[in-house]
Length: 163
Image 1 (cartoon, rainbow, N blue to C red):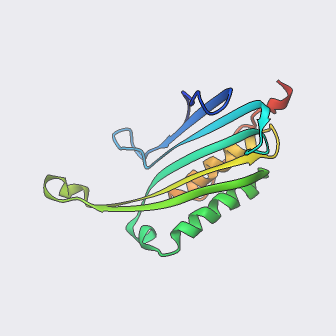
Image 2 (tube, rainbow, N blue to C red):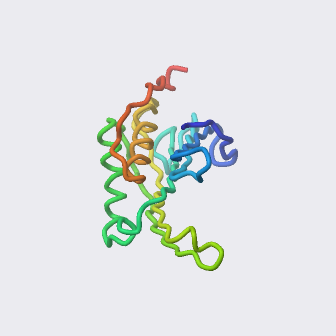
């Protein structure tokens, strides 16, 4: 589920942000949650090499087997590239990190057992003001990080350059 959330006000003259959360039942904590921030500066920014910059984060609960795979960080980074390619999102200056977290609960929290998480943080400059493919790539990455194959496409978002 996507929700519009407050965006940071100091990074660019204009900004918008979306939140993503997915869980199996209403009682559960999200299996995956994330945020995508769209930054826009009509004057452009040299570091962005354009008018737009996207900043995303995804935090997904995963299984211990995936978390302990020595190449999972590289694989998750490749998933981001694949999602951008699959949606036709033109992205440049792609940078980011992948973090794997594993924990085991003890005492009264023992019932929670072992838990593992995969977190991807990235930013890039889109090649056009049509941000639909960029947002779709973010959603596809969320599905991949949570162990699901991407299944649906998002409704196209209008080209912001004509607004």
